[in-house]
Length: 65
Image (cartoon, rainbow, N blue to C red; front, top):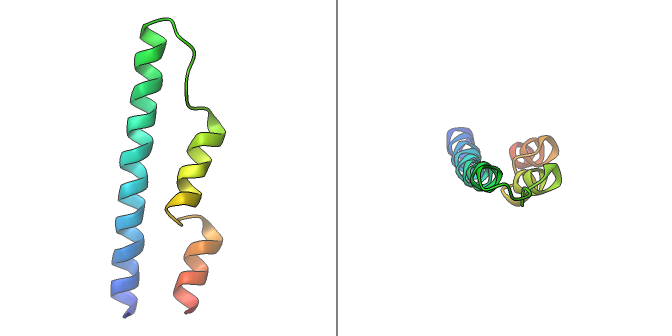
């Protein structure tokens, strides 16, 4: 995989993570409007970063291959 392809892959993963996180945030907002407790806390959002492999060490490791 070329460096450009690697960068495109990381960017795509970041977009996927952002879409998922936005959905989670929207769910939290909806629940807040209904007077319910939030379903997603900080830990859940951190899991998204891990799930899509976009944390610092994962990205650096990806480019070292």
